[in-house]
Image (cartoon, rainbow, N blue to C red; front, side):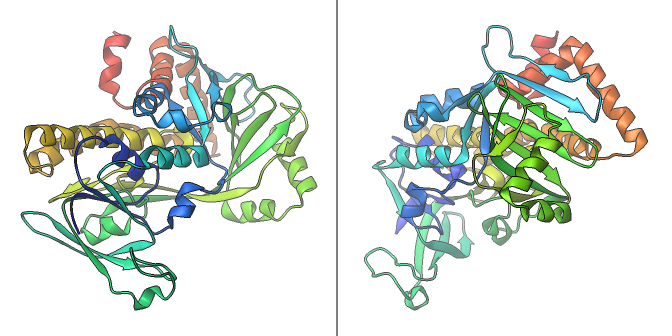
Length: 418
């Protein structure tokens, strides 16, 4: 039970890390509480993931995108931002030479594609239906206790009565946590996180509509609500509605007919009559930023490192950026025959990922706070910000670049803005 690397969490970030290390010769343990069947066929959760052009390129290069059905990839060609009842939106178009800002792909399809991509990967061992118990680190590596979940089976043992099965113990040279923004592993390693509860609940639901959307995403900061539209096929979109929790509960309790009428009203009939095309899903809005991304022989990736508010659509893009940075360090160490968890490599990863994510994380917090504040002064500032962004070319270019290219480093924009 000795490995080079142990990854906790077989969600998009954990699977992406495993895939990024394919062909490296490393022995990798992938630890996940869910069973393999659930990982292979994840349920639809209502979430459509906005992929930047850089992320799309990375997924194609790794072969993951080969497993996404073409009819499940929806181009994102333009975006508009509206403020209250002001009829003048801020419009964002693709960069010169680009046909789109990115693409929308259902979260379910991304998870399935990543799972399919790692099947049969040499050196990768899945420990499904296991959660992490005690973790101990020393100068040479990490020891991880695995506790079978209820009604689970460890390799070679029958299912049922998980509590009666003795825990496993794994030894690895390095441990990576990708177990959500509420990461238990992060806490076990003594790393705190700055968490911000926005006090709002987000509803996502696919809707048919009479009028076409022209592959344009909306972000509409209304008074008392935030409404977004993610364009799928021409008369099908994912509606995203943010409300206080008590108002959301009342909306979720409506019948289908009343729900459809209410959503049509909230979108002011801009797309004509809207009818439900999928199940309703609600999620609390909580942002998380880990105080550290690394510890001795340990690193955080995905939402365990940075859990974004969805307003700027960078959650998965940031997760893949962290995977790219960390996997490059690990692969470089492997080629050089040096320690994959050397402190200088982990600190280099942490510094680069923090530089890339911290400014936009803080900006997103500020945007989400400002554009949900309905007081008079805040409304004025909102209008001024949108006017400036619409009129000043470099700002509009910066927004388009953030959406479509890497969306990560402001430093990377400077040569273009110069």
